[in-house]
Amino acid sequence: MNFLDRLGNWVLEVVAQAGDFAILCGTALKAIFKRPFDIRNLFKQLERIGVDSMPVVLITALFTGMVIALQTYSGFKRFQAQSMVGALVGVSLTRELAPVLAGLMVAGRIASSIAAEIGTMRVTEQVDALEVMGVDPVQYLFVPRILSGTIMLPLLVGVADVVGIYGGFFLLVNVFGENPDMYLNKVYQYTNVHDVVSGLVKAAVFGFVIAMVGCFKGLRTEGGAEGVGNATTGSVVMASLLILILDFFLSKLMF
Amino acid sequence: MIELKNIYKSFGSKQVLNGVNLHVVKGESFVILGGSGTGKSVMLKHIIGLLKPDKGRVFIDGRDVTDFTRQEWFKIRRRFGMSFQEAALFDFMNVYENVAFPIRRHTRSTEEEIKKRVGYCLDLVGLSGNEKLMPSELSGGMRRRAGFARSIALNPEVLLFDEPTTGLDPVMTDQIDNVINDLRRGLDVTCVTITHDMISAFDIADRMVMLYEGEIVFTGTTDDILKSRVPIIRSFLKGRICEEKTQ
Image (cartoon, rainbow over all chains, first blue to last red):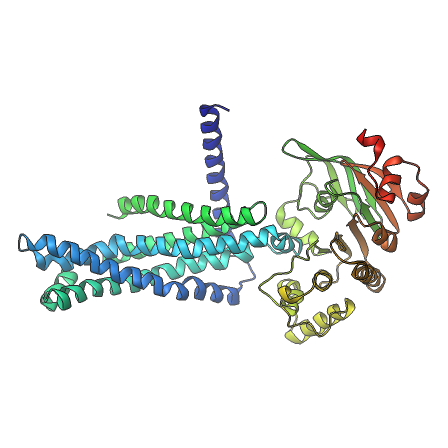
């Protein structure tokens, strides 16, 4: 097989997978409104995707806020603009860094875990068992997970915004001895509602994508343990890439 | 009751089913016999609509279901109970919740009714008292029986068994065969079982077919198969490689 054959096959495979993913997204969105509503399973997933991801997201946000403050402080101080650090931390965190980094961290944690869980169910015929019992696997497995992702990621990002801004505050005030009011005033002055809301909208989209990719990769798992391994890795790569690509288009759309 | 007409199925370049015809009569215990990789599971998956044939038609109660949508299949499948090779129990639920699952999804039964039904199903397969065990805590035979219990939870008309005795010791195999016979008699259902275990097949079958390289090479009763002079069938009964085919 020559290079062009391989390239052609790869392109066909990617296009087929994209089509399959889009169709499954549509099916999952329709399934959200179908009865029965599995509230118990939804709460289980809300806890797993949201509450359990809290520590990793908060630590990421705290250190991200601190490192932005650290880098910009040393740069801005050269031309006496250190008062603007709060503005930069606030805007960059709420618009970009909190949703994207939280999205990437949750993708690593949740997309992989969903793909492994559903993938194992696929190769051990548990998904077939659902089908045979007249239960739609998309409704039973996808809906609680994609709802949880879409609901919980904005909440996580909301908390991450606050913690990240506090990280910058802590560094400037306690390490560099700057005026706390100056930092907070600049955060309030330059970070507006639109910045925060756009970050939360991005987070909701990323949450949907993360859960959907995990479910998609899990449901399409083939083979045994190796297939589950491939689905797990593939889900993290696909979710991370989609987050970065969608981030650009959402930013272009909202700003 | 179930009819497959001229079914062809291939996966990539591999032809798995090659013009299979099959007719299962209501109330009988029907066994699909054949070696590994002959297409038995694929055939069973056509009956339950998990696979669609490349060519040929599937009929249930005289109704052509070949082109049914997934939603239409979901309705039809409520009349079936299927037990998988490794039971396919949900590993995040205990035995009780596994058996209760289809009842919760498809009926508006109260918790008391569910408890009664689950107790009855587990009693039929000899698993009473094991409700709280997780699938990982069950032996192979117990897992299969828990799978049987789940498959009969909704009072199906047809029970499908996918290799119910594979990997079990002879005593456990005999026990599983007895459970299948008890279920059939007790619930008055049609049974379709796929197996490569001859002893098991003779224990449970009214009629059987033998599948070889995607084609049906025998249809008849247990007596008929014993009288058969077809080399492939003789070899399979003796557990030897068929020389005529391999040479």
